[in-house]
Image (cartoon, rainbow, N blue to C red; front, side):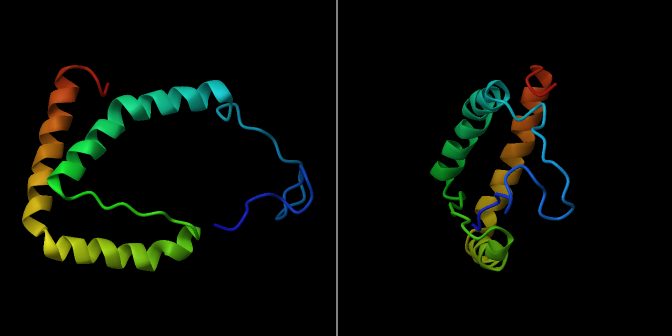
Length: 105
């Protein structure tokens, strides 16, 4: 992916205004998000991988990767349509259970 650093440090390349750090762009917030990922998302990825429906990819060019990623997903869907139907049912069941347990509230 192309670097996102401004040409002049601290100044927006588009409008010339001074760049600011968002309140939610702190080490504490990022650490909290990573803990939430480990608790909620990572277990799902492991389940999807065991089901054979997880698609791993590394986007290095940002939006320029989209056509290739779209092709990969469409190809995988054509090969494993039944697995994806099971996955969707599983996701709905998981969401319903977690809502009932108050996890997603």
